Amino acid sequence: MHQNTIPTINEMRAFVAGSNSLVLSFDDKSQAYAWLQELLKSSRYNQLGKADKGFVRAYAMAFTGYQSAQLTRLIRQHTSTCKIKRKTSSRHVFAAKYSREDILALAEIDNAHDRLSGPAALRLCVRAYVTFGDGRYGRLAGISVSHIYNLRSRPTYRLRAVTFTRTQATVTAIGERRKPRPEGRPGFIRVDTVHQGDLDKVKGVYHINLVDEATQWEAVVAVESITEKHMVPALEAALGSFPFLLTNFHADNGSEYINRRVAELLERLLMKLTKSRAYHSGDNGLVETKNGSIIRKALGYGHIPRIYAPIMNDWYRQWFVPYLNFHRPCGYRTTTVDPKTGKRTHTYPAKNYKTPYEFLRSLPDSKVALRTGITFAKLDGLAYAMSDTDWAKATAAAKGRMLQTIQLKEKELATGLI
Image 1 (cartoon, rainbow, N blue to C red):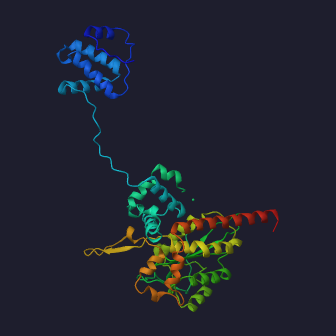
Image 2: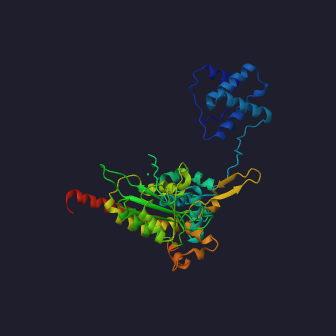
Image 3: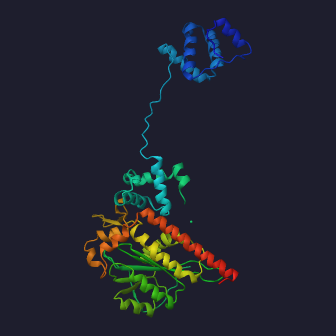
């Protein structure tokens, strides 16, 4: 109910002494403030004694529902200005620069590329807008790396994002034990083996991961076993897939690489064989980090029977390896030397994130490094046939079909159909 008349002091005293059952409602805060201002003015609150002021306060509290502290603040405002006004918020609020559509576009890239680091995601946004003309990434192309992580924490993003013993030393005269130093030149290959896991003491497929140290160009092949029978043909095919001339082949001390057959292959290809030094775990660090961030991220740790290595190689050759080299940005190191102490500092600034193909093209005399018959015009046709995100989605879809085929064949084997 609304009260249109202001009671006298005696009426207020009687109300306070009574049951206080009458409640006055207001449509909004401005109406309550106007009623309180009229109450204080009509009762000449400033001229009342202490006892009568108490009755006015109790009466106002009963009708407005305000607490004592809030009522004191409003009465003080009336005493000093003879008015009670609502205060408007003066807090500055920045306009939202990135919309819901921008966050969804970022989630699409992260879902397609398995949520890469912030600098790599920024590079994909720039390429999507500048190289492939996708207007959705116009604002994201200018975003800072740190704000990418802010957008990833938004509820809109989280609802759409889909985010899965030491080597024993051996004594052999094959290979030189040292760390290669390519000095920014392509052709220095690091190699390592990734095992897909055992099941009931049965070995799964092996992945051979090869990475060029300078450009981070990568080749991956699957083999049924790490014996010479399977390793030598797989290595020859993988080394032949690199578009530039190869100079060095560096491995850890595993016997699958440090043996006569591999040494003969590399000698035929005019490549020098080197191996990691004892107690220098970083000698082969680049490819080992790629094992986790690429192979394990793409295929996990689950057992895949080794008989399906040819099926996996088809996916590697047609989709995964082109994705890694033409569409997945990598971080490239910048090294600074303190002129006083000589200390070397390595950083990976966002501006240095590029795809391996972009980095290869940026190298001086890069055309000279290409193999005979390989041109940048041919490589451009593969690099820009599809956008980064479209290729990532197609790669993921092809992986799904590959795994489904393997699962179907396993069921047929279990039921004796094949």
